[in-house]
Amino acid sequence: MNAVPSAPDPIARRAPAPPLAVLLELTHRCPLACPYCSNPLRLVGQREELATADWLRVLDQAAELGALQVHFSGGEPTLRRDLPELVARARALGLYANLITSGIGLDRTRLQALQQAGLDHLQLSLQDSEAAGADRIAGYDGAHRRKLALAQWCRELDLPLTLNAVIHRHNAGRVAAMIELALELGAGRLEVAHTQYYGWGLKNRAALMPTREQLQAATAAVEAARERLRGRLTIDYVTPDYYARRPKACMGGWAQRFVNISPEGKVLPCHAAETIDGLRFESVRERSLGEIWRESEAFARFRGSDWMPEPCRGCEHRERDWGGCRCQALALSGRADTLDPVCERSPDHARVRALAERESQAPAPDFVYRRPSRPVAAVDDDADGD
Ligand code: FES
Image (cartoon, rainbow, N blue to C red):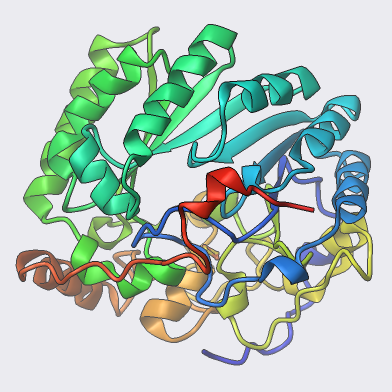
């Protein structure tokens, strides 16, 4: 970790435009044990989670701030019993309400209740196109079957569905099959997203890194399907950073379009921001979301382009990629305030490329599963939130 010196006096300190979306990480509890989990290494325990009244206040403040969308996420957000109440508040405030779920612990009755409360859209994770591989990746027997059932209920209830498939060396060869499955399940959108190595996922990088040939085959499958399925299925494609030449505009630019709120109420520009030492993230227990968005030092630190060093400062892409990902710069180059080494102009770029080639070609180590703090079998029978 690196200490971050104070920000220059920038444009970043002018009142920023409101975020497009607020992501509420209602809980870190999760029945699945996915090795690519991007949540932090230290998870927030149930006792530290915000209470219902806190989340309701956050929703009010999100609407007041001018956000348009709210994503209920986790962990597994359906473990919170107050989810329908939160969704209803989002609907009453005119916020577009999206649920990001593993699909475990949600039956048809609960799904219908959420829809009646005002849920606009559901995003379901998909680990693979077939059960054996999917359940192995999720570390949960029967997970895939439950997901298929949930997708079917969405179809019956006419609830818009997006599938999110995280791609790595163990499923990259089945991207075409996942696209067919998305069609079968009636999804309107499929996100084919190569693994991002943050949090727990970074521990499993060598086990997950695809080869260049796998990447090329997956990309070809997506491109062919996009053409063939135009107007039937929208396919978003997130390429793997370590093989890229240009960095992604992580979160649409630090503190520009999205804001995350952790289960204990910390307001973060991204889910991995707490890995950056020297930044203090404020809590909705202490200040309003709007004040934090507009005034927090941590948000101003990398907002816009005034913080950028060379060569980002003089780069024609600086207001498209915003220097890439701060957390990845820290993880791979040891500093958060330098360019993302995914960029080919970084002195660390060749090393990152070589690392991807080396890890992907070595035999894959076993997964280090993210095991839940209690038996997964208990989740469906005892889905206790606040
Ligand atoms: Fe933190 Fe990209 S994950 S800036």
